[in-house]
Image (tube, rainbow, N blue to C red):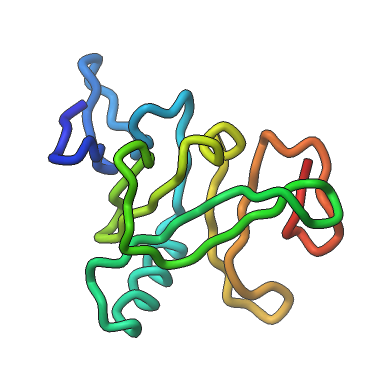
Length: 136
């Protein structure tokens, strides 16, 4: 796969075997995915903030009904050991401790009558609470 400065892999990188892969987070054991809808919504929100240097930080913190909860916010302070990925003009940042819980997870955005907002589909979650914001 081709690497960009700062260890960023892009969405349409081609492997040596000729396969086109979804983007992957560098130094992670598995991939954290972002759907097109989620990337578009994050980009829209960052543009509304008026600071193009912002990245979306996705983190896992202790708390919530099931023991761990997701946290997402815009961040301009990126640590050297943060895992970063650029997708559709949006940089997603994950700290190393959160990366252990987010490998293989997917960030999505829905804008419908029954469901609206961001959601994380995480295959590492053994159980989750009814609100969908915490897991274990």
